Amino acid sequence: MIKMPYNFVPLNEKVYYPQWSGEVSFNYPFSDGISGEIDIKIKAVTPVFVRDSEKDENDPDKKSEEFCHFVDKEGKKHYFIPGSSVKGMIRNIVEVISYSKIMCQDKKLSYRKFNRAYKNNMNVNNIYHGWLVVENGEWKIKSLGKVGKSCRISYKELERILDRDEVAKIKKAKEAWERYEIVPEMFYHIPSRGVLVFTGFSGNKKAEFVFSDRIEREYTLKKDVVQNFKDAYYLDNPSLINQNWKKLWSERAKRGERIPVFFQIQNGDVKHFGLSMLYKLPYKYSIGDLVKKQQNPKEELDFAQTLFGANEGDMLKGRVFASDFYARNVKRCQTVTLPLSTPRPTFYNTYLVQNKKNRIKTYDDKEAQIKGFKFYPPKKMVQGFDEICTQHPNICTSFKPLCKDTEFHGKIRFFNLKPQELGALISAINFFGKKGYYHKIGMAKAYGLGTVEITVNGVKFTSYNQKTYSLNELVKIFVNDIEKVLDIKDYFAENRIKNYLKLHTYVEECNVKYPPVEKFRRMEKDFQPYLVRDFEEFGGNGGGGFGSEFKIKPPKRRK
Image (tube, rainbow, N blue to C red):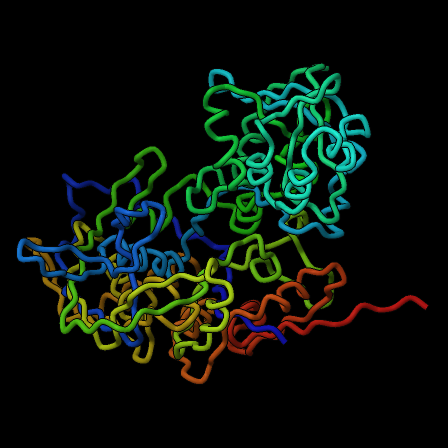
């Protein structure tokens, strides 16, 4: 049985596009427009940590262990939660409760495991090799032909060229950059054959590569092929970027120098490429492809975009603003050390809807569906990682949270909101006025940190000649508006709204956490038919979080 510490609010097929989105103005307020501010208190129910952005002067690559703060003239630290963090948390919830579009990067993910599905989609008999060059912003590959015996060199042959000790070290090194540190120079020239090329470790590797200078053909790469490569190797993400690219190829690419790559061809063009022969293969469908099929989103602004603003070409600025939230009665906890690897959508077992009877769906399946909006339910803190972090310190992160009962105070300011918009904002903050629900903010949510209780201390209206509303009236206006526009009979009876509320209920007895590595490996094996069994409250489509079980069956043996 495998349980995960997160779950999903199912993706909505209906999307709310406000009729007034084209009429929003900062100069001409709505006749029923409301402006003002909401006084808010955030109380930590469990320890909370929001990382400070300052870098260590002695080690710029090291992330700060300190809670976000500034130091005044007297040298005193003032801790706070940035307004952007609070606003982002609230916007995410408004997207859910207002039936807005799911906001995600439209990119193709790549296989992360050499499994049966990878083998079926990677034609190993049709792999080419060549030199990648970037010239005046254009990416090109100069092909050297198909990969064959002539472009491989065994370790026995290398021992006749290089020192035997060097070859032994090369065989042990797992990364290409480590191997290039061992040889006398990058692209070591082998007489009458070409230059020595290293790639990353791949199983029981018995040979390396030799790239010649005999160019057969040049291909100009399409933009989507280049972007798929960048996404696969995280070239646009400094914290996750592929180390071989970072340490070996990044600067060479900027200088227009050649980089050894492997690729496949389809209809006379490069289909995809990578840094090793069995490179990171992109899936057939992007996240955006699946979202378009499920939500069929329009170019119009949805409810959340109309309220908070849209980034696409500065279409619209937001009308909600958050101050920083400063801590009071501060009590610092002891340093916490945890493995904080971020879950990613590449783990399709939980990020895609899985049918209980059929095979596992991946991003290669046209009928695959995105689960929806991910949340971490509040729960008690998970303990017992000392041994793991002692044995594997590189995967663990140390940080200094603020203890439970720390309070943060600040304001949410709003300008020219329709009553239903302010109702949505209030509903996202106080859970429609219902008690017993909690927000999550900051790091280590999966381990129980970051559970907070938000209290609305008061709402101050600043517009002239306007009607004032109670909080309950605003919530009711928003709910009635959603029901009318989307033809919903009972908003709170909707499956996804029940899921949303359930995922923000503090479940003290639910001590779920990420499963051990060996169980992840079992889930990723080829034979993996498994069942997802949900709590009835989740309506059968919430699988992958607390209250969900993955039952792994052994493979059937052939007679």
